[in-house]
Image 1 (cartoon, rainbow, N blue to C red):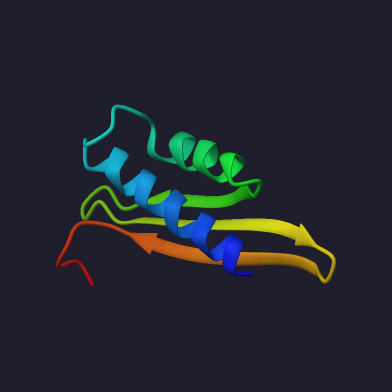
Image 2 (cartoon, rainbow, N blue to C red):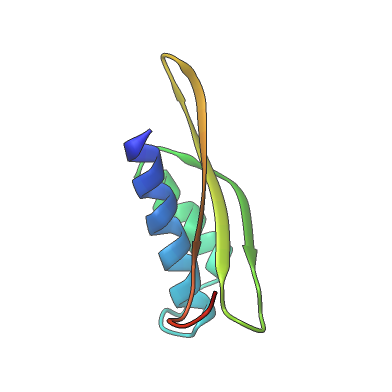
Length: 79
């Protein structure tokens, strides 16, 4: 579970950085690349164009079943 949560956080941060213009990439495509690098799959991705907040859901299969974790990231001060 912790590995999947860390991957979700990383994917959300990458998407938020791309949405904010810090990285020249499509936010959700970048989140998918980050998730794949962590051996999990991106199942949902959305970016609020007004706030720059990215929300992702990643999942991975484990011996106990499928673990899905949601994470959000965006500019400082956004609630």
